[in-house]
Length: 61
Image (tube, rainbow, N blue to C red; front, side):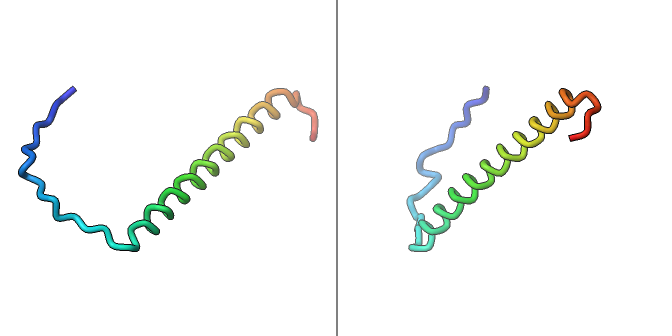
């Protein structure tokens, strides 16, 4: 584990968040949430198909 020392005077407080930044963060959060739901659904379907093939024993569904 490495500890990086950064002098505090290196970064001045000249940051600006415009009014559209809040909308951007909300869209980012919603996109991450929906993407996570899609990922969970996709893996659930794969696991379900795996067990369906495993226990099917050559029968047609």
